[in-house]
Image 1 (cartoon, helix red, strand yellow):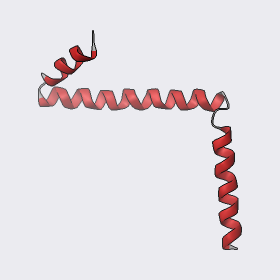
Image 2 (image 1 turned 90 degrees about the horizontal axis):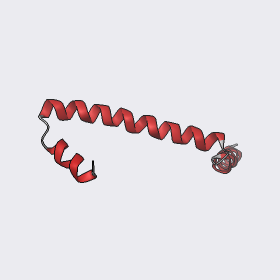
Image 3 (image 1 turned 120 degrees about the vertical axis):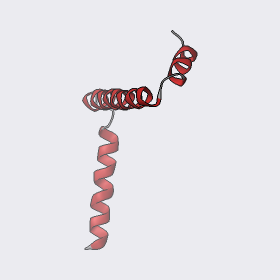
Length: 65
């Protein structure tokens, strides 16, 4: 099945079926995103970003006190 096949099939869905498909796809996409974030976090790919965010937070608190 190609992307074009999927586009064609989706375009033929009734409004109710399209709503069900959209809800399913949003949940599916969110779950895949969450899995990728979890894999990246476990692999340490987000450590640099987290360290920078904490450093920025500390800097901003230091300026307000």
